Image 1 (cartoon, helix red, strand yellow):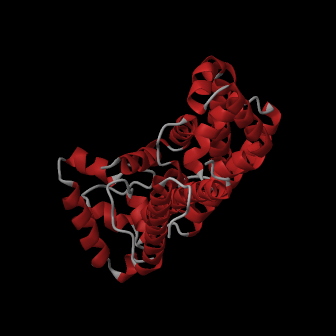
Image 2: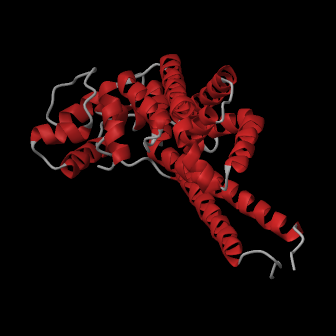
Image 3: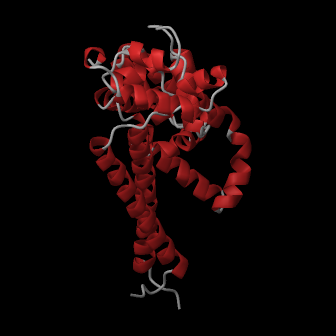
Length: 109
Length: 201
């Protein structure tokens, strides 16, 4: 539909910005669905207390999996722990995942 | 690790001072994912690692301080650019009309760009200072908007505390969708105006 007297680029810009708004809104809804559907993956910025709290597991189990003594006030991200231990972050993440999976009932809060 | 993850790791280690510095710098105009940090701070509060009232106070005051810095740059540094800007926008008359519009719509504009269309916030700070918008009114709208923004994100992070990154992605996409929608409205208005304008032969 042609609007008389209007530059064509304005109409193209309108369609482009509307499409962009639609795509971004769709992506926001998509991420919204994930909030309820999935558990947050373990990421390098997370701390052991954070992971323990979010997975309902005792911190002791996770510290043991990393070969470290239990520290209630240790807020190092696991990425930093991995660097200090000279291991890849993926190794630390898989050790934590395995510990969470095999956490004994008495250690699961 | 990307910038967002690096900032989250830094927030975990340094807490409120990091939140204060990052919010201040972002309010002046640095493109940092501050909404993600606020969500994370709310989440860390739920995990017992931070304190909600302290997070809200520090983030709100830092954001207001950064905004006022931008306002001051516009107020005292902007006049030098006035001549150049007036040439870009089509003369002194149009510049004055833009200034008048900024004064007229200043309050709601300032308020909405604090919490809904946040990417435009630093620009609005500069324009408000440049347009001579009264400082105490700017401060009032700014404080209310920033307080709403901070409380909203911190509480969302606090309630859904196990989904920090997903919430960060939702907020970032929703914010940019709002900006794109606003630009669409502006273009549609321009199209409507040009349709109504009588065509010169």
